[in-house]
Length: 529
Ligand code: F0G
Image (tube, rainbow, N blue to C red):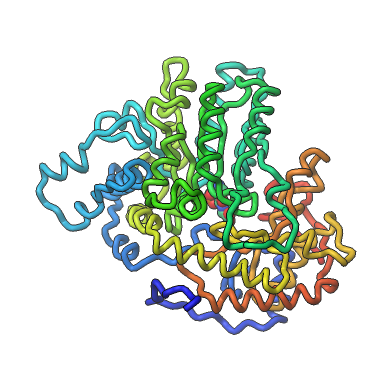
């Protein structure tokens, strides 16, 4: 039929308020035109983030009632650990302890043997007797907390190894909080991607038929950096899947393997920022010949088989409204290299976790949230879900391209990105005028749609050196909340963007009225069109 088969229905709905343009304008003025500060309840559509904005499934809501709010070793802790093993380690052989517990199994010996006292080691989720002596799974409220735990602890260890060395962490695209957490401990984050691949000329041909994996790490550049700085100055190699900062583009298995080879060659630990791992696996299946007939679960298993650890926000592909985690491979390169002075690095991390976030079996989450995550992780790896999710993103990008809007193509998994340099061709808009911000202000004011500039304003172009400016793209992102929006929402959005595109010379230049010097400034800076 040329249209997708519907795959879910809404069984709870939320009605929008009828908000007038002059009311939105007043709210914009009083919140200093800062997108993050605009009250969500006054919006029609909200593409600010795909993080935590998921509509949960009926099974997730049902799982909430099984939440156990005990302080030590709540029931959901075991369910979540096993969901992690299922998804990241077992491939097509999930064991579904979730079901054993949720079905009300009351054979106590069976529960002890298979759930509560089960032992596992050598992977990302130690259980049983190894849980205390070699902790390697750290549940946290969200992704950035796992970054904080990892990098603050790593910096402490690096300082003990050599207090004078300067360190660098290469990533195919550091997310803003990731870069900020690394900078906060005086390590320098470096983005290693190929800009020319991301920004190829528009319009594109065959946009749905190919995917060159524009999110890939530039392996040649990576090796140059290692040789230039020295392997001892690179504490780890970090790959973000999918590459949110670089237009949400996926990373190929070939690239994941190539980076692994470099990591092995130089003895450097290898990590993922794995927030959108399931979406990335879908692209591998669809576009890498070798994986055409391999299941999503098997692809995920192989992806994670290469790394020594990963940080993850479960507010994305955990299908949760809250949650994150840090994993270390038991006895992996990272653990071996940084367990110094007689102390396992997992124990150092756990001490920090308990002091700042909470005991390791809840990590700042309620037992209810933990249960919802365990179910979400099982749902996100289903092919039907991923097809519908990424199909909607592709539909959005295609409709924009049909209206000549310079969208980055092919689209990634979670968002569409408009190239604002190309958008403003033919107008007087310059990089320093933050045209992307002006565009988001107009879109919100006229149509009640919120999007987010990820460009010169967000990445502090005016505060960076000439060299650093080169890796800043001028994009506006529309991140699509999971399981929430439909094609009619997209159609409204495309109509609104097209209208602004036709009248682009009326989009105002924007200046920073307060707080240009602040870091993470899209959360706190005041603006003026
Ligand atoms: N890494 C990546 C690649 C991310 O996209 C995010 C969050 C994080 C880490 C941090 O996770 O928010 O749970 O603390 N990205 C959201 C976004 C906020 O809108 O892109 P968090």
